[in-house]
Amino acid sequence: MSEGTANPADALEARGVSRAFAGVQAVQDVSLRVGRREVVGLIGPNGAGKTTLINLMTGFDRPTGGAILLDGEDVSGWSPARRARAGLARTFQHGHLFGGLSVRENVEVAALGAGAGPRAARRRAEELLGALGLAGQADRDARLLPHGEQRKLGVARAVAAEPRYVLMDEPAAGLVETEVPSLIDLVRSVAEAHGAGVLLVDHNMALVMAVSDRIQVLDQGRTLAEGSAAEIRANVDVASAYLGGTGIAGQEAHV
Image 1: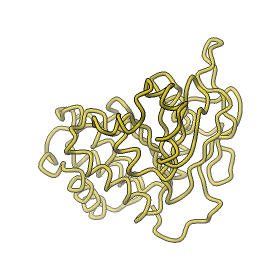
Image 2: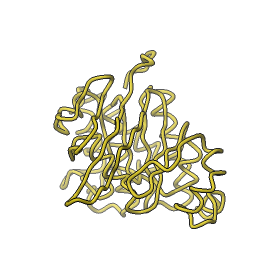
Image 3: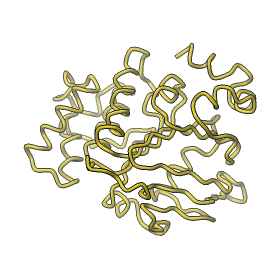
Image 4: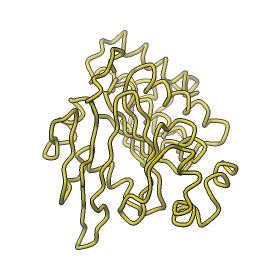
């Protein structure tokens, strides 16, 4: 991730994207923009289309309409690997760790793949594992980590590649409440100190509200609302469709 001044025009964008599966619209005419040094929260009920949108933006799926742009270039036809080489990284809801490697080696491999030398890769791994409370697990087989710690390792791997944009899919799932602050600090650091854009998908409202510059809400594959954390908290449509009328403040109080 470059620490220099980002071009204001640089962004990861979905422009009017749609994705249909067997005639069912999982995502319909959704536009979303993530600029450099910006954290955009993406929330919505289960089945709203959040992970589908991440898959479309990272190349693991192709849109049936619309386009994906990376710093102004249409990358809709690019493979996930090509997008990764261009500076796009993501985390996954389920695993995707390197089996048989230690926790530290998983992070080092990601850094080496992004062009870091062995010493820099080791240093980057130690910094990230320390920031996420995984330093004591560094030599452990990554497959033996509890689910929540595997999620944190996935975040460390994505950030180790020093990408221009990071898409995080449920990084707080499986974490206990006391582990969330370290994740909040890391997400802020990725955007503020390292200049990357972050798209954050999570059901943990304390995390999303704490770090997001803007929040977009999906419901049934469409954009329901977007705005600041305060605007989303006060939106009655969001409270009804996503939170069953309890309001975001009620969700934050229970995480």
